[in-house]
Length: 409
Image (cartoon, rainbow, N blue to C red; front, side, top):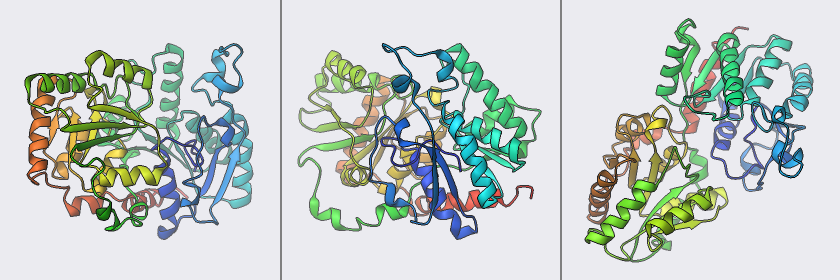
């Protein structure tokens, strides 16, 4: 299992996909061997998830550098050291390390997960050198219109995905729209090569809380606290129309001062967000909060009055991984997203009806007011129990095990 996103890396929800597969696959007869990057490659590290795997899990960490930190001179570094990404040096360490693992443990398959794109380059190399079948876990689309913005990086992404579609036994996506996009993009490839295994939540992560949080009470007594936990991308999750809706609602009296607090937990892009908050004058409502250890972030979500999803229409074929943990929290969810996208499909399937377009100030203002009123009356229904149970990562690991069982031997 080739994965850059792995503990002790901090601040990425993508870690959970690999951890949970590695934790649950043994129940279905598969033993994971993890090939990841040396921690020096990570900008931020945290020890809080290192204990989430069984102690006997085999984890090998290969040489890797971050070009922007380790190879830069006066802030500049050669472009070839960052194509397809800043961690392409990981390939140098991972290939010999992976071959040694294959020789020692004689695995049945190679699985690599994007992002980081270099993981698929490593997966393809090990597949070619060993003859083992390869599963390329894309999660989300790679080469898209306008992304990556750098033309040379875009072309490298395109080559990598073309190689994966041609050589991998399966290409796996985390949302139905992404798989559909690739079936259409590569119409000559067999349709059965493209599979969907969505993200999910780990019940074990929530087990310590039980009913104990009820005694702690609300996060901010007297205020409705709406939490967005995770990165707020300037394009893909642009909160501009939300902030403008909040300003308008304050000005016309639809929102009372002190009624609402919107907390952006670990959003990154803080310069962009702080300027936006200042320019639109919503500092009395919106706050930027620093990162928390994973389980503390879960506790905050469980205690929130509501949870906020941001997903623009240019990501209609993607679903934020955090949305599944939101569902497990069983708190009211306000989704600002395109009603035609996969994120809306997921939440509507769970029974959520509080959905407004992220690019429409008026739609957000009216939707937010209805959401707050229904939550205050206790009418904001939590997700259905049956739907939540089907979204567990244990269930997703079973889906992966069934896919692996179909690989050639």
